[in-house]
Image 1 (cartoon, rainbow, N blue to C red):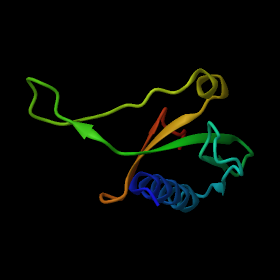
Image 2 (cartoon, rainbow, N blue to C red):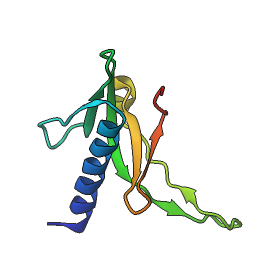
Image 3 (spheres, rainbow, N blue to C red):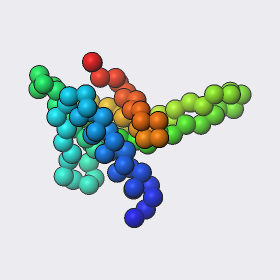
Length: 102
């Protein structure tokens, strides 16, 4: 299996664990080519759609600190309200854009 696919699957599984720990009901789409990686539903029935991405950072010229590399959502993802979930498994952190209303 391609190492990038392993990273992607690991990030999706970590995101599902993260959301489950926060009390969401978590589902995954059946289609392998979907604009959504994870679906979460809260106790009130509100649905959240996520595209899971491995956390990636870079240091821009003239700067000392690294910045998150933000991925662009497709037009379909924007229309559907898909949130980007940047997963850093090593640090055990998930950064969601736009953030959830906790």
